Length: 139
Image (cartoon, rainbow, N blue to C red; front, side):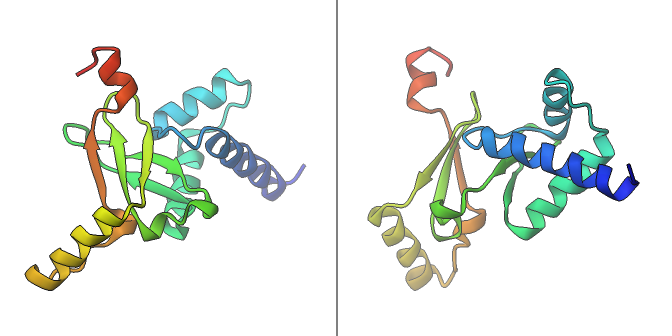
């Protein structure tokens, strides 16, 4: 098997993992560990380079959370139109909630009109704790 075919296989394994777990975000090390656990070991450098490429193309969102030096990554489903709305991200479980409501659109309009600042919805994420984690006392 040629190296090029092997890389393509590895990329498809990484992408499938992200697609199948699109409600969660992962660090590069977590992706590597999950792949290894699933019997599909892929090197950290390969995972990092490919996930960064997916991030640049918009297929994966990259997050930097307070207190963490490493980024987390999450697959973006095209049908969710993620560039058009903000997101809520749970700092406890990593869950991502799409915030496509009229109220937030109004907030963005207010910011643009009154503060002369255009919000980039595709990169705007509000951090907090989701309903499930609050119920479980994880605050």
